[in-house]
Length: 159
Image 1 (cartoon, helix red, strand yellow):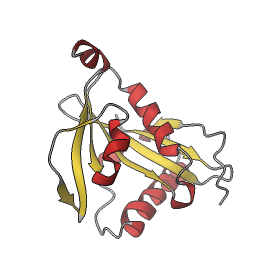
Image 2: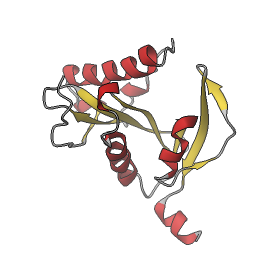
Image 3: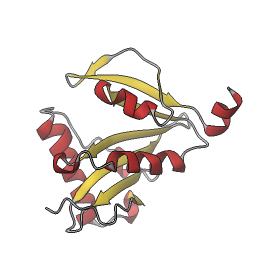
């Protein structure tokens, strides 16, 4: 696998617009990180990938591997949910997670957004305007905290 991202371009697509090979590459990275690397035996395929409004953001390597990924969902209450944010172990430290988050936040800047952050990444998400709204809790044995980002217009008027 080449570690060089393909011009570090962030790709975005709805599930219906993905071909099977691309979708498989994304799911493989998610399983490699969340199930294998973090040793969490849980059902990675939760059905939400198949919702019409689900969007996938990813960065490819020059030789076709997915180096970074995140999923954007629309929750029933109108908030967007960012999740499954991950970077291939060999590609960490290259700023790929930050590029993916910038793209997702730009897309939903006028709406509220929520996420469940692994506690060690809380400051990373705070750098995008997310604020903790829960205490720490365990999910699959890993400490998490719920975070929320208010819409851009709401944050501007709150100052």
